[in-house]
Amino acid sequence: MTLTTPHYEFRYPENTDPPAGHLQIKALAEDVEDSMVIRSAKASVIAAEQTTTSTSFVELGTPDRCEDIALPTDGLIVVTYQAQIKTHAVSASAAIFLGSDQVKIGGGGGAAAVQAATTNVAGNDATEYAALHTYAAGLNVDSNGGSAESAPVTTGQIVGGRAAGVGGSVRIFAAAGSYDVAIKFKSSSGGVVTVRNRKLWVESRAYA
Image (cartoon, rainbow, N blue to C red; front, side):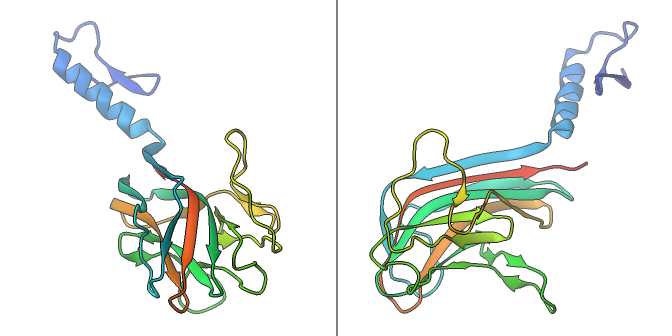
């Protein structure tokens, strides 16, 4: 049985083919998988407040991480993230990692450079939460104007920041393979960095 006749882009047996259910199911499963735009999709939602004082990038105690994201050849990883971050008289940075590799961004001449969002102590009250979120060019910290960022609403909040006017997801290309995608944090000088209401969504997309 060749199963070569397309029907709505899926193969199916001709009436003249002998019964072979396992082959029919196998062929249909392969075609469904090949037709999928989204290959892997996972989420991590952590409301609890957690801290770090590390001066190098680390995951928090309960990590913002989606594991085993299967990226097909010529596909993209799409990362969407929203959280609230505050520091105590120090600046803090947050970055997206694929495994142990911090993601990079091109432009501006020369080699692609690592991308991170860094809090501005002068612009953000060090004792108040500010919005940390993805946008097209990576991660961004929105200015809170010295006023605490309230807890996110439960229904209908946009991923982004009102002050910067940006938000959404970031698309990342990489070699085909399986990736753990995580958000990591560091302190500029060992002071306390606190993060809460963390929401991470990761998916891989095929463009065959």
